[in-house]
Image 1 (cartoon, rainbow, N blue to C red):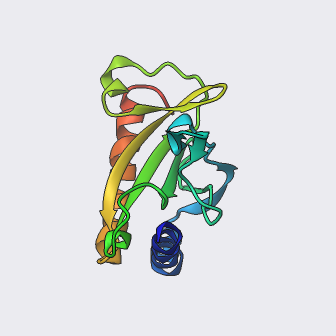
Image 2 (image 1 turned 60 degrees about the vertical axis):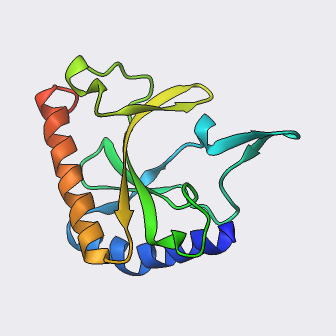
Length: 153
């Protein structure tokens, strides 16, 4: 069931949302989202991946170093769960110390050799145009906030 939901989310994202974002200036980035410690679950047999073999680590960017990642493996597993997907806005600055004015907006994405900063929002895939507008406007808000805090130029 988990793989089916992930594939349904990816289908909507890659058929509609990504092409619409590309028309708005977002491009596939060469930087891939790293696997984080929160992407695994502790089970009796040890740490097991929460992601599937279908998970893609591809990111999109209009203004580096802020990247958009569609986290299709995170979330509920039930019949209509494909409708909601989490979008992560990741600041590609490894082990960067954020200024206090933006620390509460971003949370750490902990990886084996340090951390990145991310901001996560849920988007409703039932209305793809609305999802694109949410992603685009939040991206601009975060860029403006990071520029005011002098994190980016």
